[in-house]
Length: 181
Ligand code: CTP
Ligand code: MG
Image 1 (cartoon, helix red, strand yellow):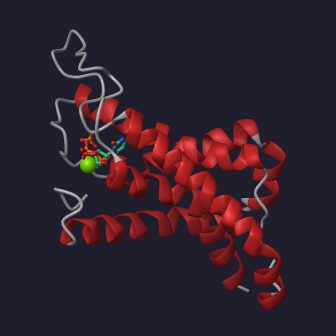
Image 2: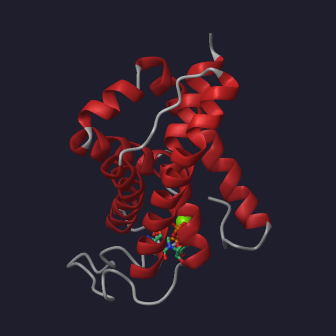
């Protein structure tokens, strides 16, 4: 059945999808790089990566996982699907990994001379997923392997760029983001 991997993928990735959007809403204040530039003359990360956005994004992702844990018995009962419950370390890894991936993408953008807000096709859409899943594999291997089976990973690979494009375009239309990526 194709429904199960799709539902499991969305459920398991929600704690990774939410942080970037929460950072857009709450971000601002002191940049993580403190304004420092590297010898190439470009900022380490730039003004778009702030302590407040990173902390709020991570907290929002973890909060989403905890809410999903509360909903899981009812959701499993209603659908009969094997939905995952998030151990706390997996929830933190998914959310923090997403934020770290986004910061790493900004690092790469600055090294390639891209200004804050410039698009970096491919990297913009996948940075946070790769980092989120990578960190979760490292710190919660058993849970990761039980949850992210091959069909689920295939769905994540297809769905993530789509969702990313749609949510960022939506945030742009709503005036929350200054560029549609
Ligand atoms: N944001 C933040 N902290 C983060 C990530 C995002 O405060 N760790 C906030 C910033 O206000 C940022 C906005 O969310 O401007 C949009 O995020 P993003 O598109 O990732 O940043 P950009 O400003 O486009 O910068 P970059 O070119 O580095 O991606
Ligand atoms: Mg951007």
